[in-house]
Image (cartoon, rainbow, N blue to C red; front, side):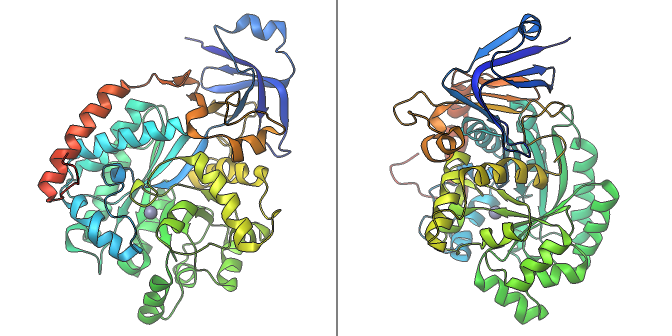
Length: 456
Ligand SMILES: [Zn+2]
């Protein structure tokens, strides 16, 4: 059945190669694709075809953002261990709860997290999922993506050495389980769900399994997603054990091409940045999480100047504590202004580019998503700027980055399907989901022996 949707009267922030803003403009969707984009009013012929017309007057219409790195299970952990550096935070909060996680809890946590992503304007999410206490946890996350309609890249996490035993796996289990997930879920949901390898951190991953999984990833035509150089301590561990910095190590293994997503990359030196630029890997910047855990400031302006595609992400709700990509936009701009003492170092257009086009590169679908252009997937976000907090609007890209917050995201479409309209989530019963999640959270904390102030 053909499905046509017209979005009219809005400021169309295309994030195309010329960063065109069509204000006012229209966007016409046929089934899952963008069929027309233009300035002014939609042609009568186009308008006549539309079975649904969305009025975006005083609103901005932008590509759905890609939240290029999160850990959705942490939705149930947010706020549990604030004010700690990375390694203490992992030991105090993340590992004890993760150990007790069941499939249903992984599913519900992911679903709440995905709804939060929708509400903040993200239509695609890369979930670095490394809690396999029950192998079905990963299936629970994929089910959540199917249920909500969000685009999901499951980066199936793994560690095969020096990691807490409950989360460590043998190379055979890593390969077999990822193969199973790839066969079961890759390209499900009309291609919205995808699966790749997600080695966790250099200090938990052996050279041999890195090589083995990367060869498989290449054979399958999927990517590899890894945290690197989040903290100085982790770089020092690698120097001591392997005699190399993180990017040097990846280059030695031959794992640094455009199919590789390097999350954090806070502590890269100049030579490493040069190597990433030469090999084409994508860097995923998580400014809120890096500030929250006091990890440091990734040299993003230098990376961009070298032509490295940089994507943006929230990181897990455990170190953020939200999934708010609009907050990430603003934080990115502010963090780099203050750290460089240069007010022009990142402009709103640059930040939107990172969240949309950089995100599409991280997601491995640059030709499919990331901009409002004819032929691309209809992943679209409409943000209401006619609010006390956002008006008046002088430049829509600037209003999106500096004025807007998640509460102003009005309507969200993925693959041409309306997941939220007039700020109401249509893809799931949100109230019932929250009630179910609250109960599941209480049970999980009880089993994990976590005492929550105020009693849950
Ligand atoms: Zn992470």
